Image 1 (cartoon, rainbow, N blue to C red):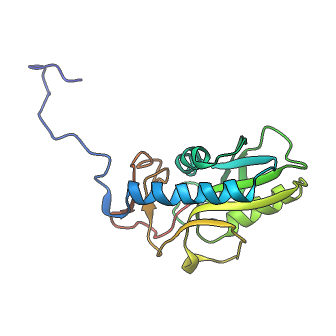
Image 2 (cartoon, one colour; image 1 turned 90 degrees about the vertical axis):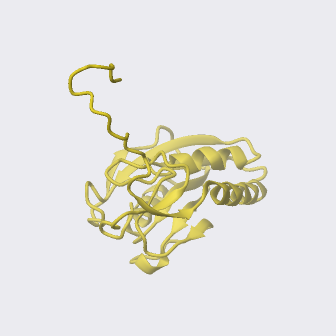
Length: 197
């Protein structure tokens, strides 16, 4: 807060959260409509089953929150945090688990909720790791996929949108931990690196 008349209180326009966005790729209404469709598909496919949603932090948190409200079934949540990027914009190929699940998934119907599939390396590692824990089933639901960047194919049961090779931010996706709070998906100005988490 600036106090009027205080030394150094120059009147500069406040920075906006969308200052780093060169264009809007998917608007909030488009995202909401597709996520409702995905929720209906999941509700139909998992009726009568023991559904556990595993959210991949941090990027998928917005998607998870909206998706779970669109699923008309009893369900449980757990969270994992994994990293293969660090501060870079291209994957290093080395995957680390930063936060593991809190509970066993043995015998559970597990649906991994991911923000974006880029090279496929990180998600492939995660799927193998969870499959080794003997769930009853293991499927993937991704908001976004970039097929042109794929280095390893990963079977994805539910996909929100297929997008071109652009560095997208907003709706949970970040650049340097910023822009996650945008209500839409935008393209990063300058497209540093051209790749996402």
